[in-house]
Amino acid sequence: MSETMTLNTGGTVTIARPETTAKGVVIYIHGGGFVYGSKSDLPQSLQNVFLEKGYKVLAIDYLLTPNSSLADSLVQMQRTLEELQESEIKELPFSFCGRSAGGFAIVYLTKQLIKQNKPLPDQLIHFYGYSDLSFITNERKLTDMTVTKEMIASIDQSQPVWDDPLLQRYLLYIYGVQQQKLADFYQISQEDHGNFSVEKNMLQQFPRTFSSASTTDEEVPFKYSKQLKRLIPECKFVPVYNLEHDFLKHTEDEQVKKVLDSLTEWLR
Image (cartoon, rainbow, N blue to C red; front, top):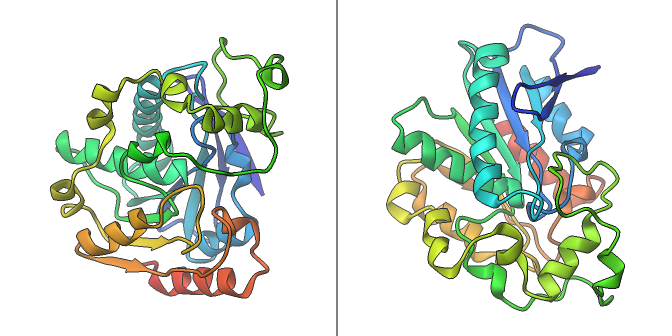
């Protein structure tokens, strides 16, 4: 049983509560390249892992690009966290769980908390994310279909958008990748990239982390997850082999089941 709450920031959060008194909170941030995606994509199997371990799960949405800049989106995430700390987290320990772009978001937010000398998450659960934006200009073939400008003409790119539950903006994301326009969508220049990087010395200050990615990931370089394993002092890395980028969509796969079993054992 879950409930949805509207935040003062303008976004919403879906709240799932364990059957017993919560011992902690997991904040889930979805993927989608910051262009599409929805907080509703949290796999039930993953949510059940958290609930059965006694965690309250807060799945948040955030401003999507290019309707908003990436900088504005990340600032709003910080404000969402501050509001949730007052209303839902309170004195409980909290953890971040991020998937793809959400994986980047949780390492970026953790960096900001370190810089601001604020309380850090107790744990990070990181699925096939990244720690800088250097790869977004790389040529990547995510589909055999070529997306044209005409195909995205009806997709709103001006009014603020917080959630994309029907994944109607997926074509816009593919267009951005194929035309190498993600930097334009994010409204950043090459000189801005450093502002969105999580440096090695910062990763060495991170809390305990669980990480998983596929060796054959064609969307986000596998090296990012390997780097987390190397640089974060307490990082459990569980790779999967020959699966697609977003393998959490396939919770019936035996390798994915093993990842979730490993996560269950790892969680405090």
